[in-house]
Length: 481
Image (cartoon, rainbow, N blue to C red):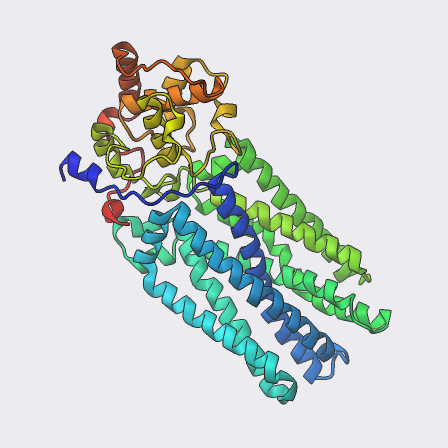
């Protein structure tokens, strides 16, 4: 395909701005809440089946009373709040990373359809139990809860494959097809780990609910110890974590183990919180069979939320600089498009005007603002979270030019700059102008041939002749939405 045609094929989507909150932070915050609620619902189904079995076999006299109360909370929290955050996730991701979502739907539309069928079964079974469960015999109650639990876990099964594919597409990237993408190298460790987390969240939430029941302390203690049985699989977390680290790409592993201080810190938070919860569960509940009050149970659940949040940050961060490994960079540009954009420019065909174009005193700064919007804004703001004026505000003009031109080398978890020397200079001037306080007058350096020549040399050193970046795939995703 000719370079001009390749560049022209780059899709431009309507732009949404979240002010001082960077786009990645918005979707990340929503994702953490949604994942926490979804995993709670999955583990909750398993817990409910267990307590229904305890009730109908006479092993625990208060099991049914707990079950009916817990299920109402499960429905209220996971069905209502979980559904709302799920819709919000779709709505937000198609604004922030439309091309990534387009690729995921394009490749896995039948997998999504299967997952939605199981989700529909989960909802139907859940509301059926809520409405008629107290009128059904024990055998049918257990069957209905088993259907709910199976459907919710199968929903996780399919979604886990799509999410893990983003980091480890495996043979899919070589054209092996959708099943190779679904059952990718990190599928199984991720699935087993998430299942273990789901069981733990359900058990900790149960301990909170049990403390609200109007029964004597001994009855509450017995119920909490029963629920704590679902915490036992947490012993598998260390080997599962090592398994996961072993199958992800080398550079992703390096981010988590010291290459990126932020990601290493969140690995420590996730591991530390999990160790605290697991140690308390093993020693306090399973070995010493202690009673825990509502405050302690709530604290443990909060620690589990912290571990979930940190773990999701790690999962997202490990993919850098891609949203789909070797296929789509985090700014929604493919490696195969770099050459065309280097020749033509990344914002020449951008049809969307700047909302505040009059704010910029030169056309060069307006170009820089468009480049920032296309290539940087998904992970950075100009003055808010992860702001460029803070990260690069002390750099000299030459440092700015060189660091941006050789971005994938100076900051290896960031995508290569996709554009010619003039666009590097435009965004370098934009950052300097913002650092200076956005004055009304600013010099235009468009004609600085010496500076542009130096930038062009750095661009060629970083990515010779605009060739695709290291590890780029020749998969056909380049022209997809």
